[in-house]
Length: 221
Image (cartoon, rainbow, N blue to C red):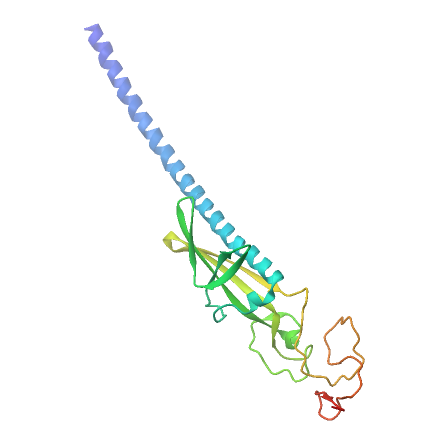
């Protein structure tokens, strides 16, 4: 009788231990699973961010090498435009559409848009989203004008579940920055280097700028 009692008691203790262990394991799983899921999502976002930054770095190099590649893509520009990069020899080529890549078993779709940029002070001031207006007195005066030396790049990366990430960067042609000049009423005397945009031109002969305000005419030919 005594041995049976001991065996019965041991069986009860084992069952209690199993029950307690199941409760502890279940509680631990309830904590661990969300942490694992969160870490996995964080890793996914990091990969998407790296893919977006990779595009921005490559596009920056392209802009510095040949601004025309960025300013004149193979299709119309705008906030809804979609382009992607394809490798060509030692450089990249801009193509229309989007492309997919697989990283760590997950598929990511990425593309970028290119937009013209406007500035106040008739193209010489700060970036603005205001509509282009008439600039009667040239750069530096009141009004909004397109800046051909600045482009807005927005890179988008999508992945399963409808998730996405975007990165925006403004590229500026600073090495050979130009401005559109349509008013020459300031007259002669503009000798380089030019430190600010104005309405003057370099000293020259056979130039008439007084006939029609804002315009110049070459004489003697």
